[in-house]
Image (spheres, rainbow, N blue to C red):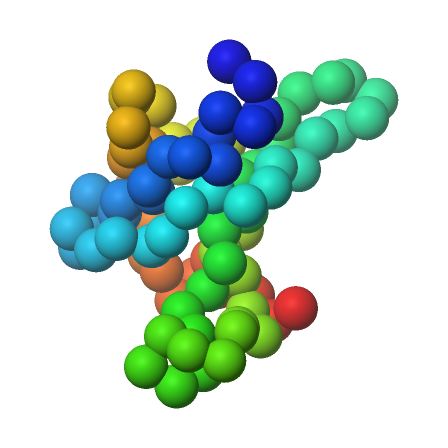
Length: 84
């Protein structure tokens, strides 16, 4: 699978059933070549509008399933939400 194909997939948290958004980027360890984390933009500032100042950094070990349309993750959202 290519990274550009991940951008079209919706990320769903199986713990809360909440839709987090679409994958925006990945973190790659340049020494090992392994994907370390999936980056998903955080919630918008006002009702989902006007951009965001945070993002979810989801470790690869928290990804439960990558399907044809969605990516299922198992996280505590507040733990993985980081300021940009």
